[in-house]
Image 1 (cartoon, rainbow, N blue to C red):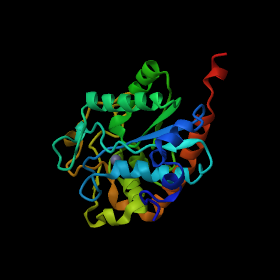
Image 2 (cartoon, rainbow, N blue to C red; image 1 turned 90 degrees about the vertical axis):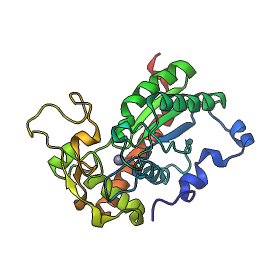
Image 3 (cartoon, rainbow, N blue to C red; image 1 turned 30 degrees about the vertical axis):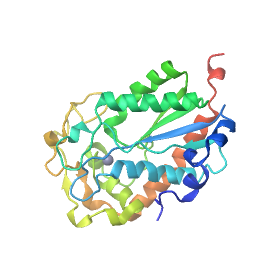
Length: 268
Ligand SMILES: [Zn+2]
């Protein structure tokens, strides 16, 4: 099992709050990169746990940190709630308001800045948080002076060789990809007997999407009866293992790049 909380290299070697205040005070901070995972607790259809996005974020970072054992990259505890009001009213969804999430992220950033750190990455594993975190990255930069990076768990394509075009386009929630990834990380939390298939009934040639440059502000109730978008029944542990392993390597690579990223070299 890959995802095992408080075990493995991420938690044994790179989890910042396992250190004492003295150790944190004395550690070299100039190039230290802090990784703040931001997830969600929200409905993910009839078969996946509502903790899916937080679990995925933490699981992927667990994998990434196996490649970062001796690097100056540090994991922070995740924020397990996000801006999930697109799923509001569906049982198990616990959402923060936009204003609350902004305040929480800003307070954490101010605190790490007070501790002397210079670099933070907002690592997000829930689509509904993207816009708010993109905005907050710049607000934090201005308010604290921290170097702020944004990274989404979906930033790298590791699935298009495996899944259909339809799934790539519309499988945005609890579909083949997410189901596979959770099966790999925590199989006992998935109830595959309830997995289903439902795609939003958008015209194939429509220019109006669910995300990207031209989209409409959908609520889950507008686009899905089951709560999912995609074909969950095609999810397998094997696919999930493949996606997670590849993502872990790509995330590790870019975190390392961020830790060496030098703003002075750019604005010289
Ligand atoms: Zn999700």
